[in-house]
Amino acid sequence: MSAALADGSIPVLQGSALKDRRGQWRQAFARQRGNQAPSNRKLIVEIGCHLGLTLNQMAENHHDADFIGMDITFKRVVTAAERAVRQGHSNVATILGNARAMDAIFADGEVDGFIIFFPDPWLKRAQSKNRLVDQKFAALLATKLSPGGFVWMKTDQEIYFNEASEAFVGAGFKPTEPVDFFAGRIYESTFERRFRLQGLPPHGGQWQKPLNGRMC
Image (cartoon, rainbow, N blue to C red; front, side, top):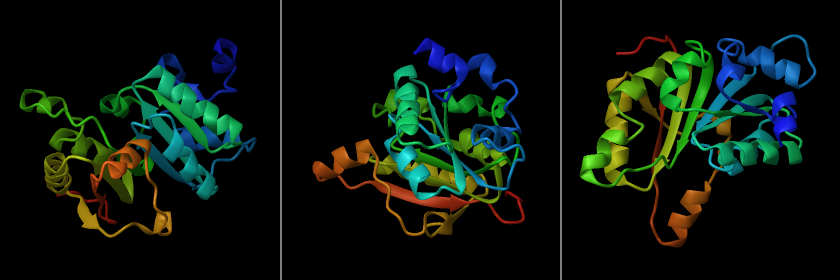
């Protein structure tokens, strides 16, 4: 395991391995595929990728895009990366890190889409300040997205969804119909499946950065 992580055969990045990636993700993926020249492929980041089920489903369906899964749990990102290797996905990488620190990981305008499926809801009122998606985080995502880039979020908590929606709109995003990138495909995370089996419907939506890049 240690050797595979060190030589990159399991695509997990953390700490010092990320220091030269900011603004260079497309070049890094081109090298990962054995190409020298970077391309204009879409770059999609899943925040809280868990074990990589959704991440790798998207990668399988969109060979013309590159995908990064972020999580704060080592076992999760390693499992997600191992899944990518088993399935032969050269368009997947994972990051062990906190999404709040993404300014050091992605350049402004570098990302084309963020996926946030079922972030920790922090149900107790005193814990709500720990929720990932708030006005500050929405503004951070806006700076990292390219013009026309999107955020897709799902949660089992209606209150959290409403607060997140207000944060995205406050940061200048526009609510949108499902973006064309997904071609109408439906992606269901492990958590969503669990909630659905309990009869609990998800609350979700997509928001888009204006094509002119100007946020309110």
